[in-house]
Image (cartoon, rainbow, N blue to C red):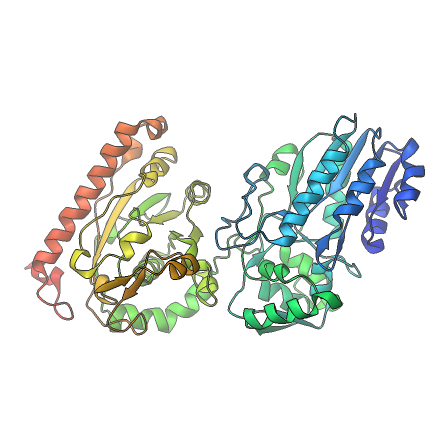
Length: 539
């Protein structure tokens, strides 16, 4: 395409885009664009942002000038995805989650896209919307460019989300591709993986200073009238807002770089960075983190504090996908963490647990769960794990199973909508049930308080009353047993996932096996804190 005009308020970005596009010219403002757009084949609009928020009014003004131009490419932002504890990670364009908190930055980006589309409605102009991940432009005016180019970055204490960073060269290549393939579509533009925020800042040569969120919130509110970024921008440094580029890859384009290389290129000292930056898990799982904690901390808890005995490891597949189905007790996720550590240590396979949003909502707990492999509980994330031949771990009773009163703690509750069975059927994976006796005693719940404000804040079903009030877990004796797998992939075709009767029958069989194993283990248990169920069984 020979006659392209690029316009936007960030000279560093618009000039780079024009240079990469070869024959493109840059417009200084809307009036200048009006003259240049008259004979243009296409216009690339990069509305940009002011203090972290997009310039919605400017975007609507620009769009009015484009009516009649054959093709327009709007460079929006992946920040249309509101960062929060419920964001599932790696979302597609069609799965844009509803705004839960009303984040002003995400809302304004959505308004920008709506304003642009509304202004061009009824026009013959073909509008392609690109939503790039966080752009890192050397000398750029964007919020992420300035964050990674600064000497100091103040980040919320106790959070380390996975972020996707895109170089301007990669964006330029995506724009060039979009100009060659004019389609009325919206595409995410992002590297396949991500990078933890702390590592991105380190690679950029920026000193990270963690500050409690409440302190930053107060400071941002006080300084916003003086030019500070909006307080809602802080959520992009606390929670996930990653996107999937699958649609763009299927259409024929994929960025060649990585988030790590983009963060390194933002630093003047990038020459000292590795030539091949590491590729990180897109959801934040960190095997080195698990290895470091496992060396002493997890090992102490597993072998010395809870003295966990295990049987049935031979039932866990050594390769290929499988759905591990367990019961969660003790209201804190120690049983899941110990199962993860055990399988990592003994089999070299780290199961990816589907977790409730409350486990990634709070400082320190959020990075801990994410780095240990936790994934937001949804079908898309489950499919992502199984399609890669990994172990998927699920507690089908949900969060309410973890908050059972102690008198009912070893009763199995309802298994929700039996989604775990559908996942196993669709992805041709065996189901491996497992049960643990002893984890319920680390925080036995003797009472519950139903505070509305507490349930809204924590998303817990209640405030539990335990002997140590959720502080130090009791040193109960644990026994974990992995049961013989149900090879549902051999008994049923994938289409059986749509048959309600088949799914229910499989779930009842899983639940019955777990119930039988629990009854047998409880019958053999003589003490909460001492003795071995399995030795007695062997005898």
